[in-house]
Length: 582
Image 1 (cartoon, rainbow, N blue to C red):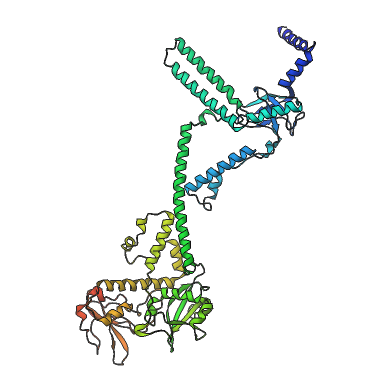
Image 2: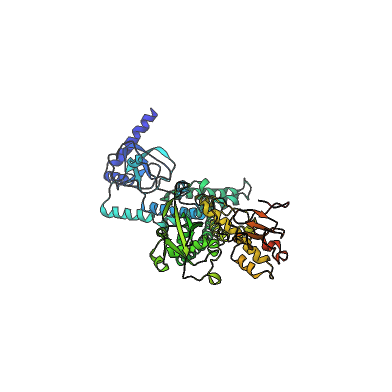
């Protein structure tokens, strides 16, 4: 009965206020300030702008642009179009977040090609569920706790002048300076709350000062709770907040890392720019790294016969004028035994004049022929002596090409690009690992060796000759015979009777040491020295070697004066110590 009476009295009071000379004015004022409730409940989540309702589409009685109030909040909200796209400020923040993440990815050195999935997971993107397009969107975040049953009140549309004033006030509250002012007030209030609480702890619990300071701390907390709802963007939970000092330290660390990375990248970019600049000036760099290089079999035509001379690796599209440099690199030893740089290309059995090489490519002088043994097609190049080139002592020799040194340079440049220590790339330190170390060691070079086996086997033979040649220059006897020294400078210490896997050696009878006439008058025997300095003889025709001097041959007069390091020949097989070996 008491509840019924209270409800009846409440109805009487409301009706009493509606009637009389000022009843309608009061009612209008009440509706203008509080609005009228819609016949359904809504739900709102903290730090979100979307409000859910029970209707599949836009609920009846509402439209975009209406101003509403939600139960539990004194703030006025405006309904905006829910397109699923970010607002202007959200787009700006998203762009800044993406730029920051790109900077961090660059600092960490992630590769866009190899780490695509990892980068995609870290990159912030705008996500929106299409099922939420039916929800109502507010012009600001819901800063109160999440609630599922809230009353929604629609405010009436004001006259044009009053509506303009309300929109102006609303926009002014949402500006950056106004929101920063709110944040500044919150920071000060939080500081005061903490100070009042610490000061209260300095007094006794039953003292008046203790109670006063706690009351002031509670008042500041209430102010913070009220003021937080003035923000258009909800604050983070207390567990996720960081202080300004922590934020400044984090930004400083990231700035240092970015500056360091920028410095290193600028150095690398400048080095890469210098390398590109050098490559533009170097016409051979393009063809050195060409993926279309092929292995070419090179022969020498000496007017009577054509003999195999060696192997060459070059791009068939390389011009003949540039291709000469690659021929010098791969066949410097064999060419120096003949006429050095004085050679011509042979095309269809006829020599190609040097003046005609300018408009020719390597492919025009290297036809494909069928190998009778392997039944496979191979590129064949034929060279011959240039009759106009100087010969004999005046011939221009090819400069020996150091493949190990070039490999060390490439490894140093590659490792420097990958950030390795320069001490690991010192050619002198790498040379101490041993002369028998493989020329190509990593996977890429190993694949290159499998693709061009004959060329790489020839490189190893040439490096042995070059090391022997350098050793002779370093340890040779200055009083040695000039003729023998000249022969050593020509690189003629290589014994072409030695068989190397994958390389076909020519047997022109141009070995090192002193060649002797046999009974038939042909050059067959050559004198050489073993590691201990003992002289032995090598037959360039049969491949035999022995310590006894052959018939008709006399021991060199200066043989005992030469040290083993100076006259040791690597290629000829030494005989067994107990007697001649064949």
